[in-house]
Image (cartoon, rainbow, N blue to C red):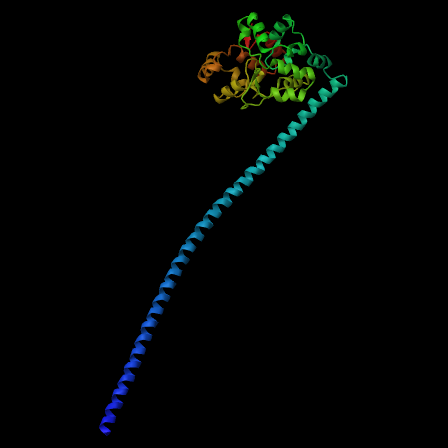
Amino acid sequence: MLEAMKIGCSEHTWFILLALLGAFLLGLLLGYLLWYGYKKMVAGLEAEKNEQHAALINLEKEFAALKYKYDELSKDNAALKAALNNCEADKAIMENKLSAAAAGFAAGKAAPKAAASKALFADSNLQIIEGIGPKIEQVLHDAGISSWAVLAGKSAEELREILDKAGPNYRINDPSTWPKQAELANQGNWDELIQYQKFLDTGRENVGDFENDSKYEKMLMKMMGVKSGPSDLKVIEGIGPKIEQLLKDNGIKSWSDLANVSEESISAILEKGGERYRLADPSTWPKQAGLAAEGKWDELREYQDFLQGGKEG
């Protein structure tokens, strides 16, 4: 019996030992699984950290590049503001001069050039219309169009017929805008006339890609003794803003440049510019430019009085 009890105790001990060993192995397995999961999670977080760090570095580089562009644009903006302020100052000075001249006339005050002022604002002065020079003015006067009011009442077709009858030198002119300009002058809408004329090219309506001094402005400035700068090729009879730009694109940027270029070279530039420029006659442009470059304004004005569209009549 004692022997049987010893055998029972031994079996019970082994069972306990096996149970403890199983529990230990199970705990070891669970610990390994937890450790493996932890290591995997840490590796994932490390990879994500590296990606976020690389993204941060790229963002810092982009920020530095954008900051540089911002600083450069700020410098350009400051320079443009300074240039704009200068332009506004010049504009204010010119507007004051123009307003003073117009106010002086309206109030009947004597101007420094009273005769010129009276002639400018006389309704028989058709040359205030962009596209009308002294010879066309005479043709219109001979046809009974003696004032802005009469011109405003004519249709473009009627004016075209008058020009056709006057001869081939007058047929290339486009009178389509003349009645509207004359109506604005007749009503005394000088500001509106100036704005309208700024986008005309020798009397033709422009597409808006050029803005230039209006005929009225130029006559006012001439009356006050204000002369255009040497880069304004439109001073030359026969040159409008588009031809001016074409010449400047080909290196002719001032009166002196134009005065020293041959008629043949100018014709070649016009030919290269396309069909619309080939009708222009540059035969007198170097001479006119030479007079302008030398400051011979009276002589230039007298010479231009005998020209028609830039050609000698």
